[in-house]
Length: 243
Picture 1 (tube, one colour):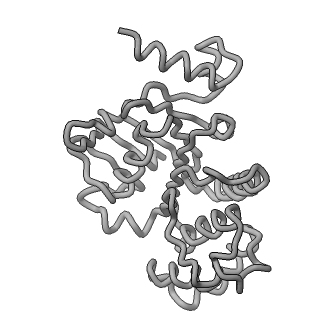
Picture 2 (cartoon, one colour; picture 1 turned 60 degrees about the vertical axis):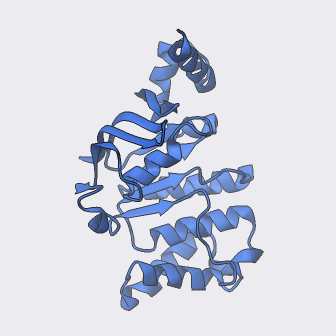
């Protein structure tokens, strides 16, 4: 089943094309890495696919919902964790979870079970009474992910969620993501870290708004005769920029 599909998706800001004719298909239960440098178009792509921005042209569907025509219905099925996820630092871990449960209209009778599960697999259980501003960077990221999951979305959008996080917290974050994959949650994960891209089933290299390559990491390295994904991507970008 195709969970995310984009056809000719384009978004411009004045004379700048942030996303250029994007074509993409992501299957149910797949973790797809959107990789590129700062300003490549990763965040704009995320904001288009979550219905926050409207495209200038092209169309896309997420969980069979059109991103423009059915944007309100789309929100019930997706979780979105932006680069600066909106935690409320004067609320505790538990209060933040209840706040997002209110936003997503999670029924009261279902909240205890969901929160207990999120506390367990994120490792935040012992810290549920701690104010968010007193959490470490890694713990804030895990709380942000838990808030994005409170309504049990089937599609998860993560915009550079491990940026600036220590290696141990990054490892813990990925452990949580792999648990979600076993539940057939579809994950679109943007990153600038090539070692993280290697963890994804497939990756797409986006550069100056254009998706230059989309395949499994091993195939990309083999095609470019490169030992690392970083070397392969540099080779692809250099070929793209040649006159």
